[in-house]
Amino acid sequence: MKTYSWLIRREFWEFRATWLIPAVVGAVLIFAALFGRVDLSAFDEHLAQMNMGTIYLVGMAVLFYLVMSVYASWYLMDCLYNDRRDRSILFWKSLPISDTQTVLSKLLMALAIIPLVFMLAADVTSLLMAFVISVRARTFSAVLWHPQTWFQVQVLWLYVIVTTAVWYLPIAGWLMLVSAWAKRAVLLWTLLPPFALYLIEKFTQTHVVHDVLGRRLAGYAAVAYHGNEQWINDNMSEAATGPVSVWRFINPAGFISSLDMWIGLAVGVAMIAGTIQLRMRRSEI
Image 1 (cartoon, one colour):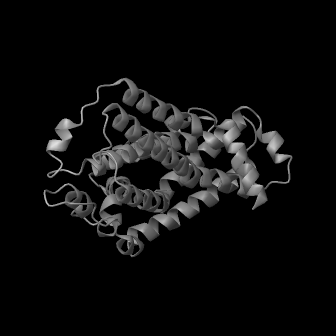
Image 2 (cartoon, helix red, strand yellow; image 1 turned 45 degrees about the vertical axis):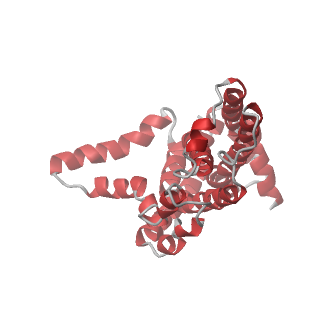
Image 3 (cartoon, one colour; image 1 turned 90 degrees about the vertical axis):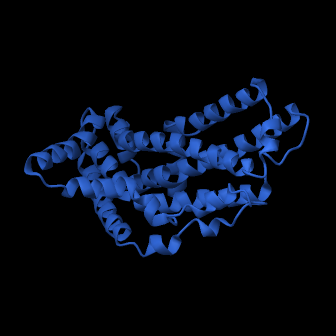
């Protein structure tokens, strides 16, 4: 466990964007709250029709999550390629650290640590922005802040982190596999094989790869959540007097019982195993 702790610290040292990007996004939003136009009167008039606290907190979470998704994808493509390119792999291979530990620590960083860092940044930013806007508007308003909604957003954040780590494990495994193999142009080698398969299917008039990739990239929400988006709809309905339980929105039982999830998990594990084998055989570029 101590070894993994140091390996995670190493990732923070080498990839400072892990904390710099959420810090910059948060600083820009807080700056906008400090110097932008503030007018909550229009929201107060429609508070019976729309829970702005829910929209605000969920919107902040979605913004940080989208930025995190882009950065985590870039990190997975670069994490094993970068230390071969700058030849730091020679130093790390001289230490009593196995390639399995190295690969798993980077996988943990991408699927858990980075999302948790962005989650913390989203929480701090939303709290500071709500405080700044309330002070500037000279009123403490529940329009942008509701403790119970905030707690449910934390539950939603953690649920998303766990379920997306499992659902998108094949994607993460593929990105790491290419990162461990490619000598240059990692992005090109990441996109070229699936694109080539897609073109072949266009000529052969089949759609197996198209359906598999489409289901993996766009099928997460249908498996992990109730399809009627009940939590968001109920929170924004005219009858809403407070936040509705997040448990009416998430669907952990459906996610766990999904065959696609288990197939993807098996494929992802196989790709990670392949990445470890490549890491053992690859040296500097």
